Length: 170
Ligand code: NI
View 1 (cartoon, rainbow, N blue to C red):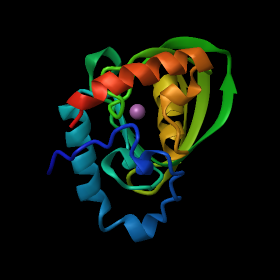
View 2: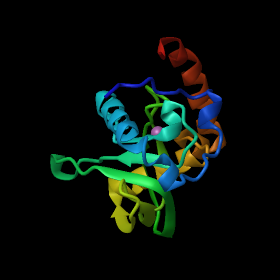
View 3: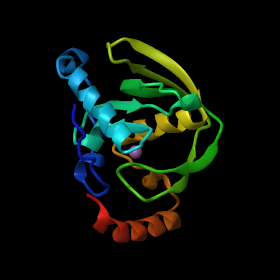
């Protein structure tokens, strides 16, 4: 198990749309990769981590929003949002943009389809924090960060803040 460096805003790997996972091809690497992703996510106190955030352009994310304070580990391989409803605008942050938080417009409820860690397809309905996490993670796999969803003036504010914060990023 290793705690990996998390890539930061400005690094090309975060901008590039990730390739679909061929489950059988990834399978030998997957247990170790997932262990490292969980360790990295929990060490950084995040609720989600996408493969591009550890430098891999693969459609793979892990999510644990800890409903009622208990772990609920979800592995999302090739995730897709298959339906969406309603609107919410809640504060968001990202381990790849540390120190930056902003309200992002998202769908209030979504249905996600993905493969789990064993390669089995599943679908899951989500609202609130989990719905936000699902949309945030799929964005990562499409090469998008939450700040890319902000209105223009808000994005300018955030970009100038990032200029200052970047000096302390590792
Ligand atoms: Ni993120």
